[in-house]
Length: 122
Ligand code: 2BA
Image (cartoon, rainbow, N blue to C red):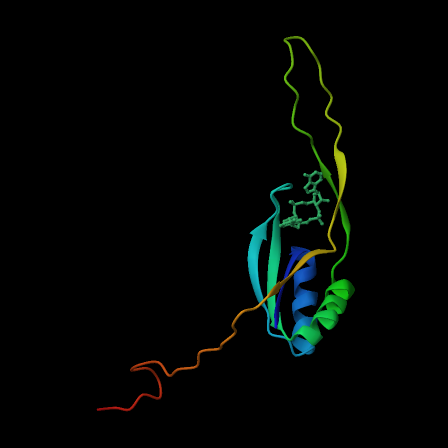
């Protein structure tokens, strides 16, 4: 079994989550942000059988798109009177950054809530 961890852009999340659900995959999304752009992105975790990993990659490829962003580089240290005109640098973000990790153990713990709905009265 493997844990597929995909960092994707927010704009692609709805389509990707819906395609994963349609494919019968369980997935968890965590709001995250990139260390470089400091912009919000989303990290999706899905635990799957080894044989399903290529299909999950297919779904990610079909739903995550590369976009161009412009970043203003940090201002250089300048002497008084010097003039600097920052020119934005182009970066390509996405489609997705994907990691595949081995799972040592996977268990869904299903236990009735103590005193909750369905618990015996008295
Ligand atoms: P960010 O760190 O905000 O990076 C956004 C985009 O900026 C990257 O797109 C890449 O094109 C560029 N970039 C990142 N670091 C750079 C650097 N040191 N110099 C020049 N350009 C740089 P992607 O590669 O598609 O990455 C999208 C997001 O995926 C990243 O957002 C980050 O949240 C995640 N990510 C990428 N590589 C990762 C890694 N090795 N480990 C963990 N997360 C990663």
